[in-house]
Structure formats: structure tokens, C-alpha cells
Length: 507
Image 1 (cartoon, rainbow, N blue to C red):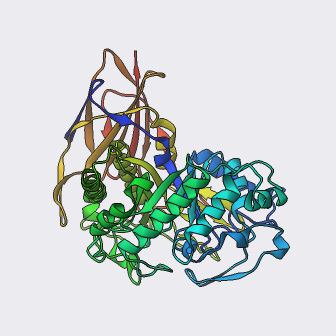
Image 2 (cartoon, rainbow, N blue to C red; image 1 turned 90 degrees about the horizontal axis):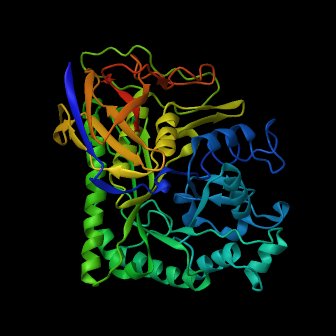
Image 3 (cartoon, one colour; image 1 turned 30 degrees about the vertical axis):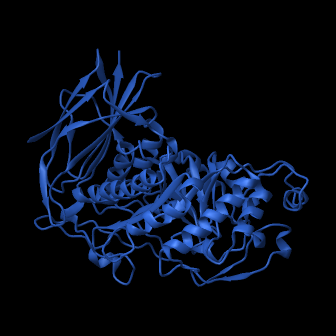
């Protein structure tokens, strides 16, 4: 069995982990909002019509912020359609997704739901068909104490105190040809500048996220020039630049979509490397503008949409994975398998290691990707657990990892390490948590940890692994793939396609 060697030193640190990198995203697509979150007719519905079974799982997930309402939806959305008496709210055609929007869940209901989850609200304003004035009116409604038309309108609608929403996205994917109100980089940069200026007149304490490149693949030619040009227009007015990326490892699963078939199961180790290069390139563009403007402010990254497109057909030469996705009768839910969970872990590890520049990240879309929901119930997808583990245990300062891993040849990036790790030190609790994935479909690896602290002891090893990596959780069998706590032995073994959490107590 080959070995991987990890060396950590208490004096070699990257940055504190901003817990908002464990955020999520919801959008009115299909039954994500109407049916899964808001469903007054459901047996578990509370007094506001929110499903308690979904609320319980969302609370346990420990998502720190929840982005809403888009996504593509927001670029044709008028926020005023979703306030006031529900019987008076207009029914609109949603041009982004070709569906009917009843507006029964608007800003006020969303804010109530997020509070019940225990997360921070993160709203996006419409800069597609919308205007800077409408964006400033929206923040006047949510954040101003009273005495103005929109703040008093909120009071009239039953909310005496401001919602006090501090995190705002200035539109969504405005470089996408599919976006309502698509703009050039200069056009978007100018409207983002003006919206930010007007919004800060209402509340100077808000944080603002400008739209960066919504993809870094070759099918998206505006990257990374878009990021430079946009920031040249609005650098002084914004705090973050957003990035979006969805990954697939199966060409069959992305046929007919806008996502190119870039990777295969043999390329799993290079997916995190692709994301890492995406982040580095956009940070370089941002830092160029920082120098150009002689600014003392650093623009950081809000990776506010990321996800894995699960596979139903993935194959690896020499391996027979017999247990595959079998749709349950009458249920249309994308099943997330063990490979997806391990890849989730790999991307979370990337965010933790990039925490000096990545301050916010939103997994997309939480209902479906991590929480399986239909009219009968809700359950944890395989991907739920790595996210929950990271949100729970990545509390402290990221240590700079010295990792020597076996390599695997990939088509896109050559030889890549297939063991990937991140380590977080919590000084208050005297705990070091190491997150580790093995992205090889065939090889087990022994992990040798050399931790340069006075005295450390491994006290916990949580692991997700199965000999059927395409197996999934279902309503009938929600615990098919779950993490298990292992007995502590002399060696730390990382099986093929596994997610691992190692807890070391610092004496």
C-alpha cells in the first residue's frame, strides 16, 4: 500500500476560516421553493406554511448564509411582486425557467424562513431588467428603520423592525447569453457601480458582491477579461467578486446542457485543481485592478454557486460498479452518489485552503443537491455529510499543509495528487481537524500525519466509503451511504473514493 505524508506546523498558517464559505443557495426552480420549502398543505407545515421536515434538515446542515432568489430567476424579478397581502400578489411568468411564479414567498417570508434555519440572509437584486433605483428601494424596505415610503410599507406589511440584511449580490451571471438583460462588461460594471452607490446611501454597512465570470471553461470566452473590465468600473464600490462553476465527470450526464463534458471519472483529482486555478486567475485580475487604482482594498471571492452534476452512467475501466441509480416510482429527484460526496469534500477542501481569498461560497442548489425532498418526506443525500462536517469542524485557522501524495495521470492536468487535505486549528478547543479525500477509484492509501505541535492525539476518525461508489440514498433507504466513526488504530487508511475527517486533540 502506498503512503501519503502530511506535515503541519502551528506556525505556518494561511488565514482564519470565514464560516460563510459554508453557505447555500435556493432559487424558485421546479418545486424547490413551492412544495419543498413553502407548502401550507403539507402535514408538517408550520403556521407560516414552511415544511418542518425540511427545516429540521436545513438546521442540522449548519449552512451559515442562504442566497436568494437567484440565480437566473432574479434577472427578471420585481421584488415588489412578493410583498403585501398574498391574495393581492400578481402571478407572473418566469422567463428564466419557463414557469409560473405565484409570488407567495417573497422577501419577508424568505427572511422569516432563514431565521428559522439559523442562517444569515443573502439577497440578490435584479440588475438584468431592473434598475439601481429599484435596488436602492429594496434595501430601503429591508434595512431602514422607518419614516420613509418603503420602510413604512414594510411596517404596514407586518414587520415593524428592519430585516437588516447586510449581504447583497449585484445581479447574477450578467456575462451569460442566457441571462435576462445580458450585458457587456462595461455595461454591467457601470450599472453595478451606480446600484452600489445608491444602495450604500441607504445603508453604508452593507457588503456587496459584483458578478464575476460565471464559468472558466473554453465555451465561455469572456473569462477572465470580464473580471478585469468590471472591476475597473466599480472596484471602489464593491467588496467581493462572484464566481460560479458546476462540474461533471460523465459526458452522458451533461448532454443537452450548457456545461461541457470536460472530465471523466479518471480525472477526479484534477477537478479541485481546475477550481483552484479559476480562483487564482480571478484574484490576479482583481489584484491587477487594485494596483491600477493604487487602492489599499483587496477584493475577495464569493464563490456563490458551485455544484456537481451527478452521474447515472459513469464507468471506470477495470471496475464493475453494479449498484446504480434506480429511480423510485413517481419520484423525480436527482440522486447524489458516493463519488459526488467525495467530490463535494474535495471542493470544500479547496475553499478551506483558499480561505485567505475565498470568504463566501454557496453550494447550489441545496434542495436536491444535499436534501432530497418530495411531497412524502425529506432525507439526507450523500453530499449532505461532507458539507455538514466541514461547516461543523472547520472552525479556526487553516494551517498550511505540506502534503506528499501519490499521483494519478489525468487527461486535462497531467499527474495530480489523488489525496487532498485541508487542516484547521481551533486554538480555543485545542483541536486540529484534518479533512482528507482519496480520489482514486482503485487504491487505498495510508496517511502519515506529522503534526508539529507539542503533543497531539488522534481521537476521532469519521469516514464515508463504500465498495459501490454509484450507490445513493433514497426515501426507502435513506441510510445506504452514511459516515461512520472508526476505531482508532495505529494506521490511518484512506480507502478508494472516500471522505475522511480526522480530529487531533492538542494536549
